[in-house]
Length: 156
Image (cartoon, rainbow, N blue to C red; front, side):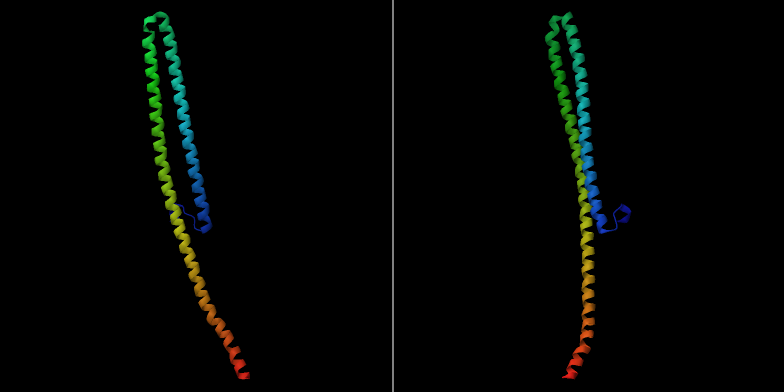
């Protein structure tokens, strides 16, 4: 266990679990940041493509008015394709993030269960030691009381 980086004390276990929770939250935040950055980049690329198509459309509309409808249709199809692509990429990113989070949560739960098992084992050992101490103390008290009782009986 020690080679896995587990702390040696019960207090260390709680700190370790808290650190794991914080790491998990940081990873979730990083994942959201990556998705946001991806979305922003895709929006920027889409905007550039739209601007290029618009410029091309305007130049072609001036030269070839009869192709205006065809260009509009192509622009619309291009936008639909871009939106579908963005949706697919976002869904894939979310699936990957969910999978990573599931793995991390499972690892976290396994570690937490192990720590709880160790804590219960240590508590059981402490309770066993207390029982032994009580068993030892009881005869000691009896030995201390016995001479006093004998002395009282002799006086009577």
